[in-house]
Length: 137
Image 1: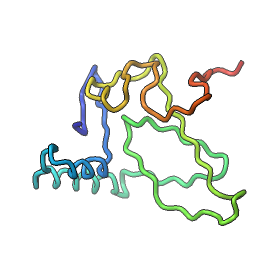
Image 2: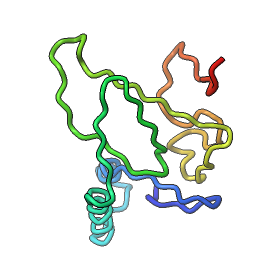
Image 3: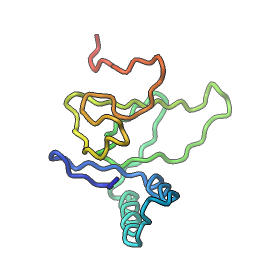
Image 4: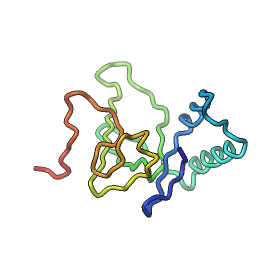
């Protein structure tokens, strides 16, 4: 899947270098060229530049909202507590509002559905309600 897509008037990005390089283990996947590896290296370097990246420290109770296809983001290492009651507990929620960004057709293979307002990717937990009200009732 290409990293950059211009679709329906939006620039949509999907970049996970470990997925790209991991696919190289399959014989049917074309080998990355020196030029492609150089482009990936440049993208990594740009994403790490101090003058354009934002570092955040999340504290207990903090929420962070990111759009996976509009901003490159990554986790860094962290130290966890040995006591079970103090261990890190991170929840991830994938939202797809009805007026959300349309995704390019090539995303369908990865996410299943690409229509705004529908379940697109994520992890389905048996018994969990997939609909969440965005307004307090």
